[in-house]
Every structure is written in C-alpha cells, then in structure tokens.
Image (cartoon, rainbow, N blue to C red):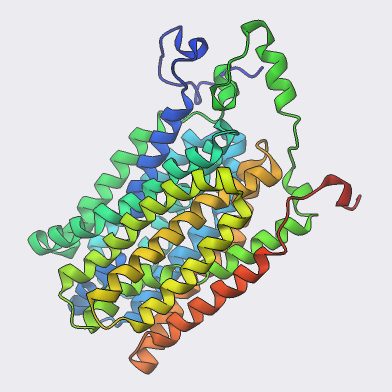
Length: 432
C-alpha cells in the first residue's frame, strides 16, 4: 500500500475517523472540488458581463473580444491533457495550487490591459493555463474516490461550476457599477488566488493514500492492503489501451459536437439579451439563470444516471440542450429567454457531470486523469471556436439566430451518435 507523500498528506484527522465508518474523507475532497470549480468557473463566465463595458471603454467590437476568449477556451481545454497526466503522477494538490495562482494572476492583470495584444497574453495564455488545472484534476480525483456513489459525488463536485455561474455574474455586475470593470477584475483575481489555493490543501489524490477504499467501504484492517490491491486490477485501462477502442473515439466525437457550441450562450447571451431591449442587470441575470439551472442539473443528473444508466441520461441531456437553442431563437423577451436559459443550463450541467462518470465507468480509476484529460483536450478545445463563430455571425448579420440554429443541429447529431455508444470490451480490442 502506498503511503501519503509530503505533498499528498491530508489535514490531521482523529484516529478513529479512517476506520470507524462514521466519516469518509472523500466528501471533503468533493466539497473542496465544489468550491474550486465554483470560483474558477464563476470567474470565467463573467466575461459576457464584462464585454459591453470593455467594448464601450476601448472601442473593441464583439468579434475582436471573442477571439482572445476563444484562444483562452482552446488553450485551457488543450492543456487538460497535461493537467490530467500531472494529476496522475504528482497529485492534484500541486497542480491545483499552481493553477489557482496562474488563473488569479491572469484575471488580476485583466485590470491593466490597454491594448488588444495584452488581452491575448493575460487572458488567452496566463489565465487559460491556470484554468486548465481546474476541471480535469478536480473531477478525475473525485472519480478515484468513488465507485458506487460516483454519479452522486461528481454531481455535487461539478455543481460548483454552475453555482459559480449563479453568484458571480450578479456580483460582477454590482462591483462594476460601484468600482468599474478594471477594479472588478482585480477583486475577482484575488478571490481566485486565495480561494483555490486554500481549497487545494484539502485535496488528496485517492483513498489508498490514506489507507481507505473508494466510497468508504468498510474493510477489516488486516485485509485492507489485499482489498486495495485487488480493486486496482478491476477493469482499469491505460490511455493507450482506451485509444484502441471504438467507444473512446465515439465519446470524443459526441463531446466535441456538443462542446463546440456550448460557450456561445456563456459569452453572447448577455449581449443578445441587451439587443432584445432588456436592461443590463436583467440581461446579466440570464447567466445566473443558466448557472442556477446548471446547479440543479448537475445535482439531479448524476443520481438519475446511477439508476437509469449514463448513456440514456446523456441522450436525454443532448435532446434538452438542442431544444434550449431553439428556445433562444424564438425569444423576444424575458418570458421565453429565461426558460430557454434554464433548460440550457440544466442540460449543460448534466452533460458535464456525466462526462467524467462515463469515462470512469468505461475505463476505470487508475489512469482516469490521463484519459479524462485527453478527451477534455481533444473534445473541449474546439469549444474555443463557438464564441468566435457567434461573434462573427453577429457582426455579419446583426443577429445570433444562425449561430443558435447551428448549435441545435450539432447537438442533435451528437444525440444520434449516442445510439452507437457502448461500454468497451477487452475481447474486442485488437492486439498490438
């Protein structure tokens, strides 16, 4: 059994905690992951709130502002393959700490930009590098801590991102009104550094580091080493092995199609609402509606998938997301915009909660960081082009309708591919 390293030891716990069954440290990991994702994604999804103020102050149009944000999304997604491998090798605590410092520093420096190239550097490179060490390390670590309650645990942890979307946009709007957009970025950056680094101290890579089993399963102390050893051999795939399965590439294709357009509403829904004649505050609340519904979706979809199965639940979420984009097309005011935003948030939250759970179910726990990181990089990086496409469509047509139609169609194609998705079998994998 591996002993905790200096960088992976958990905060001191009572001696009976690990063995009594009354408390499982995995829930501390879940709570810490929730908070880290709340801060990181909450800050990220305020960009749409800042966009009109940055544009008015600097004269940069929406297409120009969308490009560095797209670079940000592309880089932080692509670097998921690096953060995933590092999470497996050195542990999530170091990865999250470095990432939190970089993300916060990049956001603080946003308050000092005066040229468009500076926006590419501080948002598109520094903040993006830091953000790459959020989603993959947090969710890969939670997968390691749970098997039977994996859907529930990932739902709680990943719901932090949606909760951040709920609280940070109105917070940013209030701070901008009081202090201006530059000072607000400085405040958010400080929150990012302090909050993420503090929570990272409670993250431990896997239960075996503390002599525990996933889900806090009770095991007699003399047999725990043997039980952990047996557990590590159960249906675990390396990244190289996973890449030789059709299921791996089908997962990549499904998530590429849905994530390609997932950031369109995150960046452009506030300007879209303003164009409909909605006040800036109520327009910014659209992001909060998405966040609140995403919070509910992540909490609900995980336990539902534990009962109904991950694959059917994923199909349902893709159908709901396509319907949400059609709702945006038909929106002329808050009466339909908010319900469509809620439907989008619920389905988006459910899909992101299902992603690491599906990977864990299909390919096991041991190389989960590398596999999640690879798929997140390959399927998530095209999401960078969604806001860019929407920005240029708007500049060309003065409307977002074509962008929303494209988004709905891609989600329907992904839904069709779900019917080809099945758990891989080692007997069907070709030998090298």
